[in-house]
Length: 256
Image (cartoon, rainbow, N blue to C red):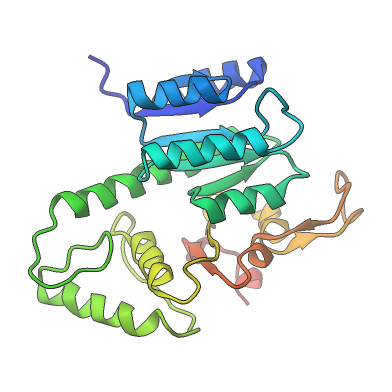
């Protein structure tokens, strides 16, 4: 029996299918090339994390089929972490997908190391959320996905309830794996921004030379390969919640 975690990759490009298959060898990687195959694989294998190319047949040039696939996946398995993969000229649809319930988005060209980190984080967050749900036994009303049976956690929950309605910048401190992103999402869910995007950036997962353009975007012609104006994730998080994970790994000049 294969004990590897199951990853569903929805991608119609045969070359990328092969690349993903050998690059994600830490997982039992299931490949689907179109919406019907993706839904069949979802029902059969129940993957906890899905990477979804928005450009799927019969018309890979637009995102309509990919967005329909996302809707079906989340309707069948709402807890699934879906990472949408999009072309470098289609960030608008990626943000739309996040607003529809996708966990995160990744923009081509593919950097396997970065995508692997995003996938690993998605699996970890799913495990944390399911663990909280499975061990939900508190008598007081908890926040979504958070166990609040001990006094310290109940105090933390009350603090989150006070912070959420405000516009205050919030610093979450804790060791890796303690659930800081779960808390950030709880704050977002309780806020008046809950119907807007939650954008998470893992500062440790993005090369330092790409961080500034990833966060703030860039103008056409700003550097070699900048063929068009591109918005940064901070701008996409406007009116929503922007979560900087591992901010201590952010260069000092960008922190300022």
